Structure formats: C-alpha cells, structure tokens
Amino acid sequence: MNVPSGIRINARLTGEGSEHFDGLRKRVRPSASDLLREHRAAHARKRPDAAALLARSGFIGGFEGPEDLSARCEDCLTDAIERKTALRVQDGDDK
Image: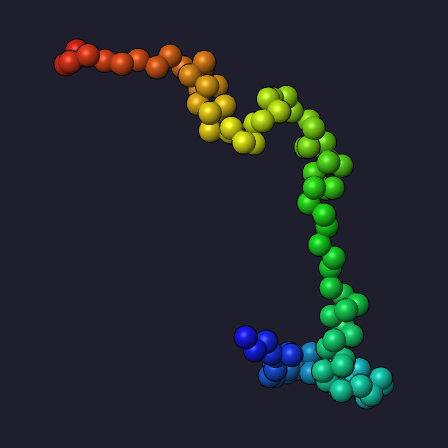
C-alpha cells in the first residue's frame, strides 16, 4: 500500500488575512509551507486524556454499581427497569 508523504493544499487568502500572511513571510522569510507548519505546531491543541479528565472531574468512581456493570450493562438496565415498573402480561382481550 502506497502512503503519500504529505498532501498539497491550495488556498486563496484575501484582504486582511492575505496582508497578515505576506507580512509574516517578509519578516521571517520561510516558505509558505514552513510558515503554515510552524503556525500549526505552535497553535495545535493537545487532546486531553479522556480517562484522566473524567477521573479528575469525579465522574469515574463517582457512582455505585456492580463491578461487572460494563460487561452486563443491558442485563443490569433491564433488572433496574423491572424493579421500578411491574411488568404485566395481559391475557386475551381485557378491554
């Protein structure tokens, strides 16, 4: 399988965006590609670790339930609903 080493992006900047980009290129003198790479590296947001974020917020470990809840979630949910609402079986046409 051939994996491309990169992609090519063509973009047209107009107005203030164009003037700002040209000003940066004249001051720093990198190629447009290098300027975009540097900008992305400087401003790219790091993705937070979801598990760590949930643990810090108290979401993980903040509830009670069986230890195997994730493996048996449908059974546990069905049991909980059955406990809250009586399931009735109706015979015939009792209208």
